Length: 154
Image (tube, rainbow, N blue to C red; front, side, top):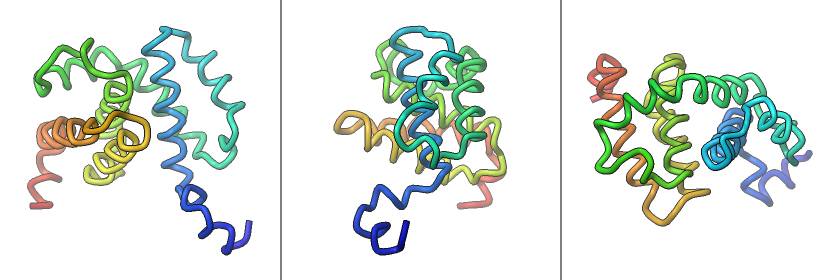
């Protein structure tokens, strides 16, 4: 791919890690709606157009990690939301699981990047103001899970 075609379509400039998050969001969405096995979801997503440009390792970490830790992650999120987890849209729910998982397990990624990425996913795939909700919840969660990093950034 040459630079000219890269600038002609902004979606081509997404980083491999961002693409991994997009595919993980799709996988978690599928899991939330159908309660499918993560292995079959992964197999299906790996066949998707553009998956070859995603960070496969990060995708695996997000999809399988968020599913394995979903109970604990929901326990972290629940006190920070104004409704029950079941009332969240599947996109907001999936974005919050990804954000919470990254805040908890990928401390090498700055908390602001984690929040921004979850907000961007929600803007791309979610409802009108879902990104604002995700931003607020993850901001509170970052203050709890990464208090020193958040304090240093202020």
